[in-house]
Length: 231
Image (cartoon, rainbow, N blue to C red):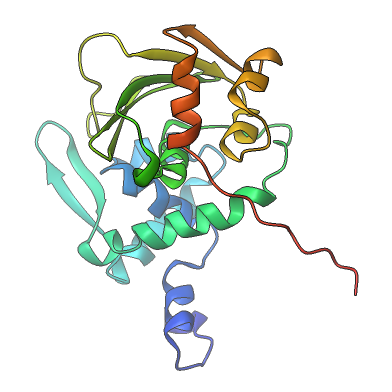
């Protein structure tokens, strides 16, 4: 880490030296969902070169952010240390900060189970949450998001969940929602649930359409006005 030192005595500087290298924060993002094997991390970050993934994992271990531990029936997995877990509120705040600037996806941009899980956790508002059980499909990813007593749990349905991670409960969800990247506009409050349905941005394929109203209230990121470059 010293080879990349900025030469400044500052907490922000230290944080950047620990997690500021390319791909490092996305590795942390995925490990916030749960422990992952090396192959799980590579699958969730399809564009990362294997040598870079190995290097970043080694650096994060040396920095006390990640550790490698044996897990029954899974072999060795990577997980966040308590120091790494403390990054969760910071990562969620960064996600909320970046959300209004996302725009439309570029060609080749993908949604992964872990990125969608963290997006839901980023947008979750416990103070406005309504108890409900949602099954959300975005592209090839399907998640089960369950809200109970102001708490959110998310489990991966498809693609097949890794051996380590949340499992969806049995039984049918209250509502099954199918959406594309345009669901961002609903979460950001650009469109109403009725408009999302009318414009085929979100489809409620099972359950009452009113569940989309509760979804939009529960998962919401207030936008802010991006400042232009004009002086």
